[in-house]
Image 1 (tube, rainbow, N blue to C red):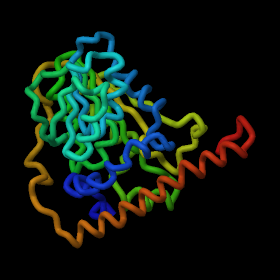
Image 2: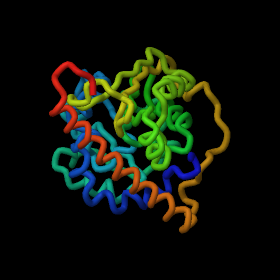
Image 3: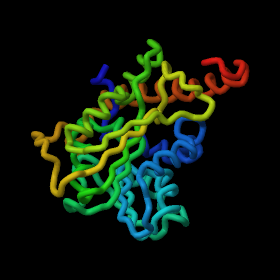
Image 4: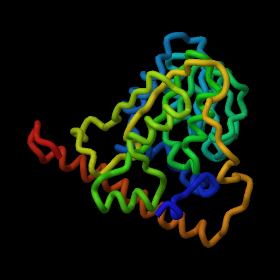
Length: 275
């Protein structure tokens, strides 16, 4: 099913339309403010002068949590979607941020540039997650911290089918392996669940886990990779694009139904009993 997954170029057009309602959809049980704040907490933003990059920052949903702890002038939001970034530019709390278009697998920042790196809900569109994690390692300074949030592959057969049709849903051990191979130390992973999820993971979540790591040395990642697999500037096959979009919308419908379903189960299932 991997060939059906939307990647960066398809995501560009996908978010051309989703950007219209993106902020209204984010807090419906797939990526809540509480989950976002947990992820930002893992960045250890203990100084308002820290330089932070938010990669795949989109409309700035995550960045609004970051600028509560650091000065907005020190924060850069990067995304490949100008339509998502246009929404970020409209937010008053982000007016002093630097907002640029760019590719998560080929970041336009110098090596050892930032103190912190965060990316939420972007890795699922990367053809080569290891390359994106390597870039996270490269751009932060020695002793800097990177935090990445993304979906986790479900175990329920039907949820697994829809996950595989829609985007990349890695396993938790994949995230840890990517970080360790890139050269990060003190790699930690924790699950990000809405408060009503009660720990049941079989259906998966759009934002299912948060992995973090510390850069122990200066310079790029010691893991060398070959040429990039996907060239963003290359055009898309319209038939394949429409097919992927169709599958993507099926996935969106399913992963909109799941939070509603789990919320209802939480209301009707006695406290203390798993759902």
